[in-house]
Amino acid sequence: MGMGKYVYMDQAATTKISERALGAMMPCFTEAFGNPSSLHEAGRDAEAVVEQARARIAACFHAEPSEIYFTSGGSEADNWAIRQGAALGAKKGKKHLISSAFEHHAVLHTLEALKKEGFEVTLLPVHENGLVRPEELKAAIREDTALVTVMYVNNEVGTIQPVEELGRICRESGVLFHTDAVQAAGHLLIDVKEQNIDMLSISAHKFHGPKGVGALYVRKGVALGNLIFGGGQERGKRAGTENVPAIAGMATALEESLENREEKNARTRAMQRKLLEAVRKIPCTRLNGDEERRVAGNLNFCFEGIEGESLLLYLDLDGICASSGSACTSGSLEPSHVLLALGLPAEIAHGSLRLSFDETNSEADADLVLEKLPEVVARLRSMSPVWKEKEDREEREREKPF
Ligand SMILES: *Cc1c(COP(=O)(O)O)cnc(C)c1O
Image 1 (cartoon, rainbow, N blue to C red):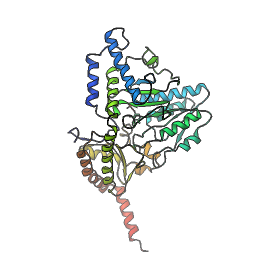
Image 2: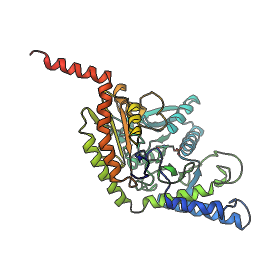
Image 3: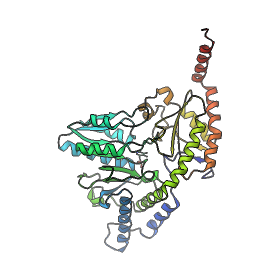
């Protein structure tokens, strides 16, 4: 059962730090504890850790070390990239931004703020399969488009966008292209050059690194403006003493997650297939997002007639940690904006469940989910007025004389 206490099927919300990443962090507290800006040996030791980490992370994306900026996580990287992309456009009188309807709130809320500052925003539809259509991006780009930001992998439904094609369209139109790759990094092979990516956000805690650290890749030549004023850290663009342990942990976690990637991916795929085939047998259940073009570790279902929140509660009582969508919206009774963007009616979107898993999950984890989930769904349906109404209606339909 993985961690013993419970089955953890919420890897898209956050992950447990790996032994190796933790091991890489420890000496940064005890030995290389200096301030990287200091002009003595202790400082140089810490600076070496930071610069090595920068080079190691850059290598994972086929970028240059000077193109990597450390941040406090994915949200900060998204905010920085979008605000700066918008500002660069505004200097040339371009105040139109393009994104997709089901981005993470770190992107959508930044765009909302920019709207209040006079930018115009077009959100591309993601259709029932959870995918942006390149031809629709092409048609949306205008003379005054400053920036396109489309996420690489959606955090709720796991669909993988045609990033390379989207990047090519932007490059050909002379428009900056940013992608929130928080759910892709460590899982998929990313090559910022080949994929025409100008800016890319990552977050360590989504690939078994520590929380509170991430990075923004910015292609050489894109004149990134300052995020935090102060000292000269991050080439003067984001001041503040570096989080050396976290940066070291992130580099190690990223490298580790890409080692034997295909083998780990194949295992996760097999678990995905097994879970999908079994969960599908529960009546009135649908898989959300394209079945093929999704990451190996994501499944997102809707069960008619029940509420996602109650489903999570009951699964939790059975020792299963899952999610109804994003961790940010749970706790609120609003249906997920992602599922609404897929065109699901609100009452169906309410009954959603996201299972997110990876190679650290065992067969026993999947078995427990498959033992408990159908029971819980049946129990909730037996208490649901909505489900009862649906059954009665179907009963009446059957009894109707021809
Ligand atoms: C988790 C997540 C973020 C936010 O990252 P933090 O490091 O938690 O700020 C942004 N985008 C996506 C797609 C995510 O899954």
